[in-house]
Image 1 (tube, helix red, strand yellow):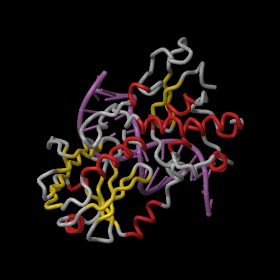
Image 2 (image 1 turned 180 degrees about the horizontal axis):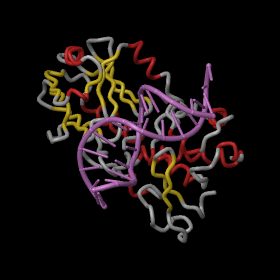
Image 3 (image 1 turned 45 degrees about the vertical axis):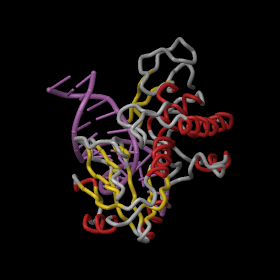
Image 4 (image 1 turned 90 degrees about the vertical axis):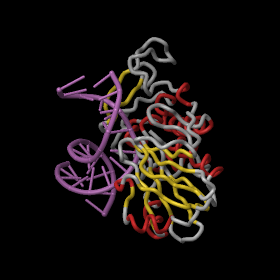
Length: 270
DNA sequence: AAGATTGTTGCTTA
DNA sequence: TTAAGCAACAATCT
């Protein structure tokens, strides 16, 4: 499940490898993986090169050398971008560069996509996202403002990309555990102290996950095909039924919040 | 063999 | 008008 730290890691990896390499050919093995006009997709990319890759929320934004348009890539749940790997049965798109190297877009469940957009469409998509939580401009004050008047629970809020960008199911669970707050706590019942702790935990958990290059549970791998290291720091995600690493007494419970599996310790999180 | 897995969209409801 | 909640999408694993 690529979330902010995973997308950030892949972005860094690709920026070291594929910038300004001429795309000699582009092979689309699965039409569904291309959103929008397929002909425009191939036409825009063939003979072109990616000038710079940026990240916003969980989305890659690739600026192109010979076009004002942009290539957007979303990995959704099972997408991978692997440089110089090998084609497999889940490979959907292959970028062939003129130096002989290749970039593979693999996506087992076919939810991810690649899409060419103009600058207007790009801006329209990007303006829907909430603030980037790791930027210094994401202050406690800003977070308080986002919470103000909300009737939902804290996990639902953390997952809402239009309120805060980049948090998914893994890090939402880890953040509220770190903050000792139950994932189903209603926003309106949170005290200032708890809000501050959640805000700090957002920064702390995401920054550490970026440093450890993401969580390789399921399908996520880095651009070089290697795994990220954050899985060994997980405290609740994937730990259902195990003893809580903090209190060492209570078992980690699983509940459902907006249809998502949600793990927490009922002793440590209030 | 049904149910769980999850990011986002789009719809319905309040 | 806006927010909240949920089904749908897809393929695999348990």
